[in-house]
Image 1 (cartoon, helix red, strand yellow):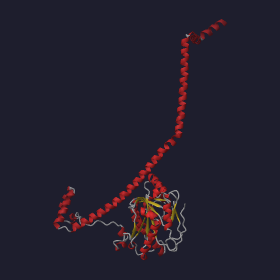
Image 2 (spheres, rainbow, N blue to C red):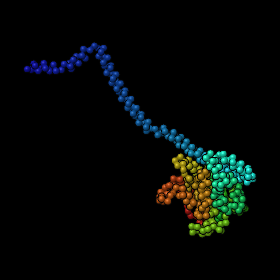
Image 3 (cartoon, helix red, strand yellow):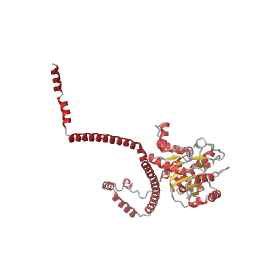
Image 4 (cartoon, one colour):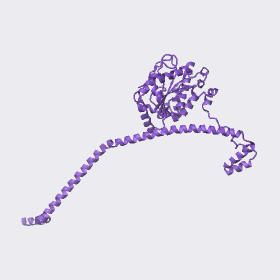
Length: 442
């Protein structure tokens, strides 16, 4: 029995013994070759694992470093987008100037056509209209023939009618018609600069106690680099009818800023006395005193006069006052923020670089016509900063929107710079007897 057991165990493991015996019975060459193959397999496996690990590590490191490598490219893309936005603003400006010239040509053409029509004989008149009828569709020509001799058919002859008059400056400000030169400046100290990136509009008037105009100009110029002074234009509008005062103020500016005037950085203009209405006949509104109504009405008229003059002078218009100071490098900050805003929010109407009043408001000059017309409609009703808010509300707020939604919608077309770039310094207001205590947030 024990013998049978051992025999059974030997019979059970024949494969194992065969493999062992096979290895022992191998020739030395085959054993060496097998070892080499095994070693190669091990080495190849190690190489694959090491390579995979290194590639994963490199990939992870590349992902971490990718923002740093992409940063110059992102900056280039950002600069390109801002350059495109800046070019678009310039194209909008050129388009607005073209529309203005086109309107002049249309008015001239209408006058010539009306004059010629008035001198035509009956036969000439009929031949002209007969020729023009060839432009009608055949159905219309046939219809008119069937109605020959009727008032209905005669209604097609409109060549001699005058153009419809749009409600523009003379209709909205009828006092201007008393003088054909009411819109022509009474004084203009012009430089040699025809076009600028940004036009600074600074209205100024005679103050009883203290003038801040020279301080304002000194600060604005000191805050610009030499390169920036070549890209901007400062227009000082003296809103007075006293020509002696106007000339003395202009002389003071030229004496203090002789180089800047010579280079064309500073211009001085003053409207004709007939540009202003009879302020004594103004109706009282908002419960204001008559003195305040006159003051804010004149301020509105000065604002739009300056805007209208500046429209053809540059791409952007910066609304300022004559008693402010600016932070250093304010021009570059304005340009950079305007370019970035135009990429993100191209439909903005104006950008606030000072959060109170009518200071530091940047407009595209191509957008000024609509606002000028709006102020002409309501110049007697409310002050200019209220008109700005009212204009924004009329553009984006409807009667079904609550005040919160309206404020959010206005913010979309009136983006704000993070901090005020301008600070009000005038203690004595241009309104006689008023002390200006409001300070702009920094």
